[in-house]
Image (cartoon, rainbow, N blue to C red; front, side, top):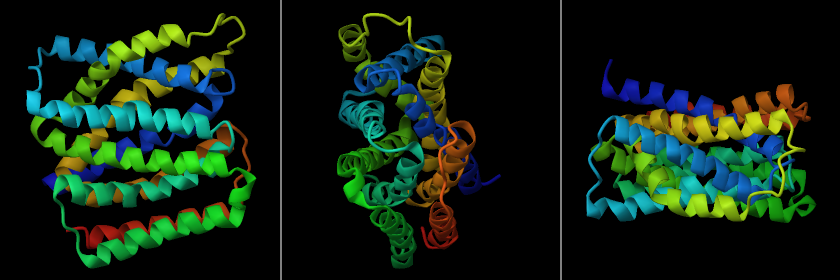
Length: 287
């Protein structure tokens, strides 16, 4: 199997895992405070990442890598989880999932700025078309219904794209699971302190769906998913493999409909199919 194909396979596995993140977050924020949820998932994943680094006796990253690891931590450990958790207090997970269609464009832009990649002009056409479909859908739904929720989702997409591109660039030297583990460990001391500060007075009223959602977010969304995702981006190219995120709304909408019984409109499906079709065109001209 060539490197590019391996990158697409790893990236696809990562996207499937990430597809459950927003539905799980939607369930969790019904009973957990968004800030507590963010620091709890990061703290749990950080402890697991630390255990992995110690078990495999990984060398500490170079001092020159710390700035990049800090960007990864701010983007995907803190920024995206917190902003999406806050957004999901105002919008449904089905609505928020469609915004994920903007992630490929965000990731590709930062792949150029931070990773030095240079996709062909036609790539940007397909990537922009997919993003335009998503933005058009949001406008048709009426942003006035929850401008704060949509603004938070857009901010989450920006910081996440930066974190993805920076982590992928660093994964070429350190490895995929090592990058996310070190980023989690770097933020662990602060996360543990905040965990105590924002700890609810009692957990007696927290039901099992919220606990399961927190476990999924900590183990899969925060750690395991990034093992495959960063490896895929590093192997197949940030801009190219990043287009797989256009598939994430499809999986996410299916989860939102089946697990949360949230309404999925015909227009949501049309937009999702449209952005999926953009994957083929963007992939062809990614390099």
